[in-house]
Image (cartoon, rainbow, N blue to C red; front, side, top):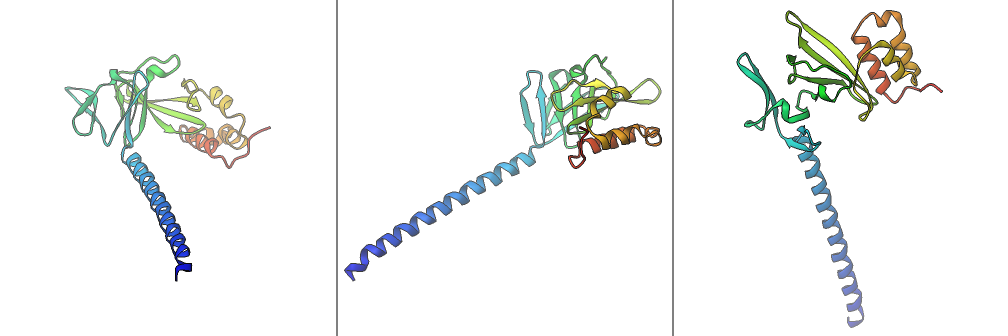
Length: 203
């Protein structure tokens, strides 16, 4: 019996060690899951003028006849347009026109804070939509950005062609005369094609 004692001690140590490793891995996996869950819950944020981000669980646009449009975070924190450069609510991502290249800010917006444009396409090519009142009707302007670091510039057909020229599928779709007549659906559909990596680029 004595000869088997070292074997049992070794087996016991090995069992404890393996159990400890499994528990540690489970703990790490649980922590990762909790972090991902927290990230999903905190889908709203504002980007301050200094570039820092503040995360919230809710972000609501408040407008009214006798109210200055503003955001309300987590049910009580008031955020004004002058304090931030961009924000993400559960509805959309919007960025200040002050970040645009040569753009005159609009102070009467629709769907977003005044002077902010909503991103309607995201990827290698970002498309922003600015809806505002022109005194009688709602007008919509589009802006284009190559990647996340490119300048945000007012849409023109020439600029769009230049940005998508490396993708045959997107370029041919955009320049198709019949499809081009249906604007802005053609613009958004082209952006979707361009941002889809399945399509082969030009040489």
